[in-house]
Length: 596
Image (cartoon, rainbow, N blue to C red; front, side):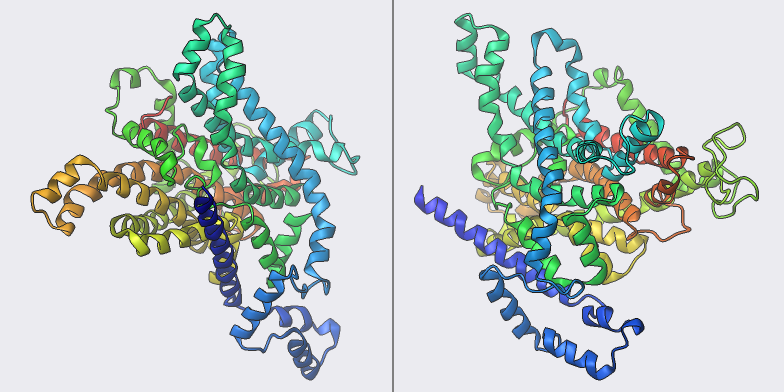
């Protein structure tokens, strides 16, 4: 036991060091110069000689290896360095912004846990069986909601329409209600889904049957035996939620104009304040453990058990892949209107992307004089925007950029991640250990921060945003592909093929690879919806598709300035994102054989 703990502790330290190293060199190669961004402003009146002195004082001209060693040794002593933009110690900046973020993150986490617990418990209560399917589908809905659009929708509904909660000069408690809900709902989804799946597995254990045989009520069995033993898998992803909380805080603080670590991180990305970004990455990486579930937490809310790579948890992966290979029950499929609706939404979205002229004859970039911000009506189905452009037309043409970018992102994650995972699972040994530690490093870095860094490195644009999202998805595909290859490699028919004289490459090509890709391809369908959310978020924050190109996330960003006068500008593009993500998740659940 002690050897196992020491090995895990050593792997954790290795991941922290590798995350620090990767982010250090990745941030160093960003275009531009943080010192020049700060001091080359003509308003400051600094001469080139004075700027050179500033560069010398900050060590910007030192060799890269020296900067690396200095930063690493300082961080080992708890010194995060100084912020170029603020001129203050990073530790003081974090200390001053941390209370605001904690006041948002901690209540949001507690609300997410309470909501997940309530959904999982209520879905199995005997008196609520008629609501079971509805309650079990709520996590899929929650994970399909873009955090920024959810915040905007809450403002629109509770502040401008119902006037229950003010967002302009609110009180301390009033100002937390809507942001906490916006952060909590998406985070509660993976917790609730994993808890539901775990309860299903615990409910069929022998000790539960014994408790029922002794006359204990169903509610008592659920509370005393099932729920307590089902908590461990849900708690296992708590470390990954730290990075998701930071990402949710960044987005929510932007929507609600709050100060905190999220705003600090976004300013550091814009100004290339490396010391601040390095500190944020290390804080997030502290919550990561190498034996955590494969993929980001959002992947757990799809209706399929989250795959694990640790041998103690391989049964979850086996259950997943058996479900993927299960023959579809087409008689039941014919009776599922939700599945046919999902197909209809995906087909309509694809047709919009391929032939938008079939759905509208208007120009998405040209406005009509005198038609600014018209409400939905017969001539303008979804109304017009602030420049008099038909919103329906812009939503239709936005499908081209949103869907194509998501496909590029999924393709990058699928090809690169599957290649790495397959190589690790096939070769094993030191090659496997090296590749999987690199994958752990990618998972330890908050996905949003990794995406922002890649975008600043490559530049803005639809394709570059898609590449950034694809890079962040590589680790999820790699872990799943590696676990699949390991499982298939030890199966009986593969051992028989080897025993009959088959070479390694022949057995791998004919038996291992084809049988390992089924679960990976099903996972790619799910990742398409997650890529849609990530791309919409990047466009909303201003790092994705530049205006005036119609892209769904950008349309929401442009319409948030008119929440009180033109609700349709954010509502309909957001509904388009949610509809496509829900459809992708529903199809993924069907292909993986999960419960509808």
